[in-house]
Amino acid sequence: MSARTPTPWPLVALFTAGYLAAYLLPTTVGRLDAGLPLSATQAGAVGSVLLLASASAGFLLLASASAGFLLASRVDRFGPRASARAGLLLAAAGYGTAALSSALPLVVGGAIVGGFGSGTATTVAATGIAGRSDPHRVTTLGLFAVSGLAGALYLTIPHLGPGHGHPLAAIACTALLALSLTGRLPARTPAAHAVRAGTPLPRRRSGLLLAGAMFFWSLAQNSLWGVSGRIGLTQAGLTEVEVGAVFAVALGAGLLGTVGAGALGPRLGRALPIGLGTALIAGCIALSAAATGLTSFAAGEIAWNAVYPVVLSYVIGLAVSMDPRGRWAVLVGSAASLGTACGPLTGSVLSARAGYPAMGTVLAAGLLLVGVPMTFVALRARHATQIVEVPAADLPAFETPAFETPAFETPAFEIPVVEVPLEGVPAQRSAYGTAGPLRTAVAPASGPVGA
Image (cartoon, rainbow, N blue to C red; front, side, top):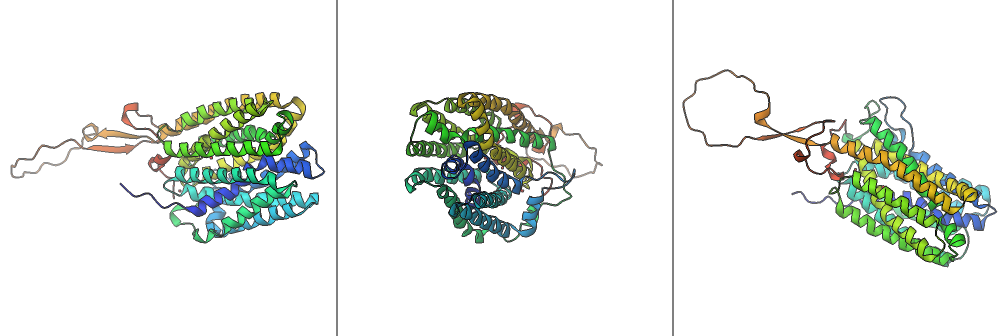
């Protein structure tokens, strides 16, 4: 039994710095609305622009039927270390400028630059995690770190006074802290994991279906997440301190969910956590959007944030397993970022026109529909990566020339079992074990590498 590989803390730090902006979205949008001459819809639009810049750093279409993703290949060309440093410096400079300025053009411009830096850091982290032998463990560690940090910030920021700069400054400082760990990243991508432009993508239809579903999955959730602060303040009648405390507890529940996902690992496969988890999230969104007091608001937010990282970790693991070079992980993650980016504006428009409860009902129904293709892809990927055990006695016989040899007795022996990987051929259920994020090695790699 091999020893567990060391924890790649630089990748965990990159993951945390890249995702923190999305986790702080409610307080960022709420403070932009309160601290700048912006309406609620305009503040949501600024939040969407910030996250759209983050998504654009990694969301790149296939240039041709055999092309890789541009930014993923650039990570290979420039190396993870240089790419990560460039992204983190952009994030620190952009968010820092937005935090220190009260001029609207500088705030928006800084948010865009910072968002692009966050997206670059996330892309480097995704390609690095895809190359690990334990991608699901690294992903859950990253989700654990960003949930814990965001929860601590939700408890701290309300006590620092009003103003839009505090959450943006926190993101900038996190980027600088992560920058100190980039020296441990490799200067060049190992040749075995380098993305070559002429290498075709495996499982293209499943990958595109998953990426499209993840766009709407993230859109629905972040439409509510972007206006959750305003729901707590206006509809539920809470103070900012109370809303921050609810978010902190909710993200603490997210930590427990992340730990649970790491403990379960591949035991449940991927289809059940993704399908059932998405259905539970839909119910939580409807409950939270209709909240009129502390109890219902807290129940919806806490239950939602407990389930969300579990589902996200399995989706990321599913994307990683579809291409060990990390190209599908980059595209699916960027599609999720694009949906996240569109969320604040979508939520602001829906809530302004239909009200928060109706918005929650629409988003919950959309999530239930989106969960179907995601579960289908997970089931299909499971059947495509099975190992079928075929006894040697069942293999075709080959005639060999006969040779006269001295007679001797041979000991009794058992018929050996040969493991033959079959792509796309379903095996009998009794012939294989449960697929999961740690079984990605059985998927034949088209070339050099599991939220």
